[in-house]
Amino acid sequence: MTEPKAKCYPSASRNEKDILEVLKQFLGRSDKIKVFEVAAGTGQHAKAFASHFSSASWEPTEFDGSLLNDIKLHCKSMKNVKTPQKVDISKNLEDWEFTPQYLAKYDVGLCVNMIHISPIECTHGLFKNMSKLLAFGGLLFTYGPYAVDGVISPQSNVDFHNSLKSRNPKWGLRDIRFLKKISKENGLKLEMVVDMPSNNKTLVFRRLPPSSESDKLLLTLPNGNGLD
Image (cartoon, rainbow, N blue to C red; front, side):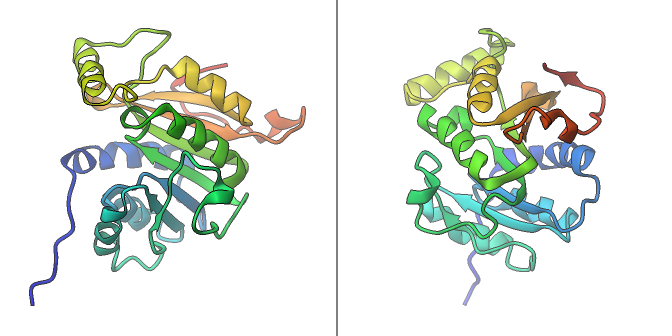
């Protein structure tokens, strides 16, 4: 009997190396980090990144239940990747069908290409739930195309935004200024915007403790476009 093949998204194949470079820039070869991935898709990123961070505990989640088996197939040989779970990130963590193992102790959150292809409730849920999942000082990485101070550029991103809106009026590129605001409301700080190929960006947020001493947790940042 022929073994089923896992789906592969071309976009994930194209961007995995560039995203990995950003993760390496911030995490180095961090040992035993705990990672919670939202919108894991087919599991291609989980496989690629968990292969590099071989001591990490990688926990992939996905809203589309039909993709859970693809994640399992991609990661079947990965001992450090947990069984994928179905998660609607727009819902409060307390209403999920499972309880994350390392609640308030995850070192890293990852969300690739979800924010612009989902209703705004998912973005709100991402930050609200990451404030409960991440340890103080933990990092959230989001990747995709974004608007900057109300402007979408270049024209290819404008066209992409309009195409998304035509498919679903609740979709579309979100403004970094807006994401900075809602991250702050949920106890996270936008630390850096990293320019990526194909007019995408990686945004790096840090979970801050509820204290005036929060800046003591901030690491020395590599060269890039920092935001106050």
